Image (tube, rainbow, N blue to C red; front, side, top):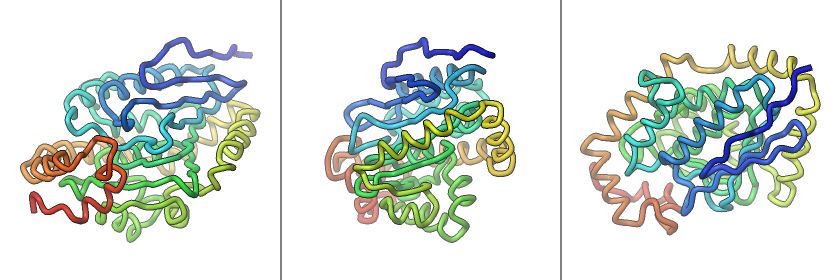
Length: 285
């Protein structure tokens, strides 16, 4: 019998706690859990540890911030977080999309427990997890990239099309609107919307149940489903290239500059109601 590999590293933006075969990983990157170089650096390290053949069988991801699971990427630090992502696979795979694909392929079952907002790459992180459960009252998902000036580049196009179907994927991506948990559940963006007071116990029950099953069976079943459902590396790289090109373009830069003037990437109305704010934005048209 292989001995379990306990976590040894400590991380700046992720706290971990092991309970039997289930690892809890909590993101905490104040003020609003932006996906910047520090988060990506920690995630690269955590995924490396979880790739160990005797790591935890189940990982539950959540956030220390009840309002923001992940707000989105830090648009002021795109080159910096991209450089950190490259450390997971080399310069040819310098993208969050390929990092998140590594998350999908872990030899562990990954479960996202969503409270607050998960937009852009935050939503794409959730989509790369094996399962997603959201607070009925407090979970919000969105893909704001088109409203800023670029298509999603870290997996949303691939995953949402497979999960939601063409029409609903187009609705989610092209409107750049916010989706509450009930609508996200109905569309298939998350597995279930659970009353907030029941969410912790519900996810703990599923994680504990799965964690008690034989590891070889879990990995074999996940690998078979991945073979049928994951996008190819070429598709992931193509989406990343288009995003990274257009997000640096003149229109996206004008729209981003206007958002920053309105309080973008700070804890205020612009971030809390980003789907509505994007609908009213005119800069860069």
